[in-house]
Length: 151
Image (cartoon, rainbow, N blue to C red; front, top):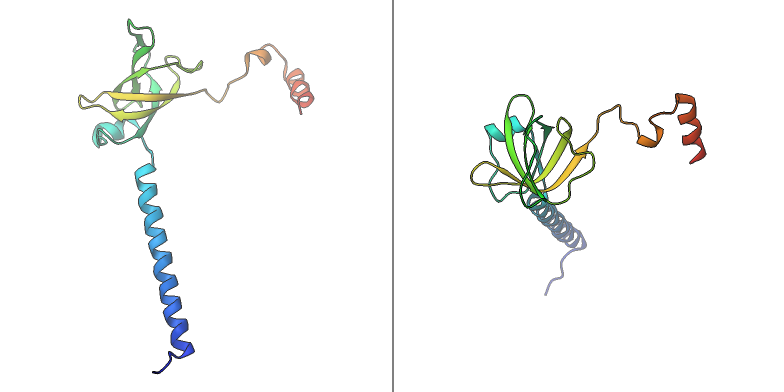
């Protein structure tokens, strides 16, 4: 019986390590593919709708005059727009305090067969001029002192 030369042993070991590394990378990519949540603007979703069972995020502005609360008291219907397309959204649950008409929103959920977006979660966004109500009537100097006192 002849033994494998040390050089060949290292090459075989390196080959196995490389194969294991590639397999781990492919497994991680496959797992992340099924967990990734894609982000769509209304125009993107209108042009290329997501699969009905695929979890995605829809972001845009809540169209003024479109927010309607249904009779059950927890379900709302509204339209998300980006100025180019409009997507109807339905959400049941507790709405964020900043969720109002004309504000930015990111809805997490899936598209129903009729084209309505069924949201499981709403993330309300405020504009860049947001000021907490406790600081609304303060001067800039008072606000700086208040922030410094909380550090």
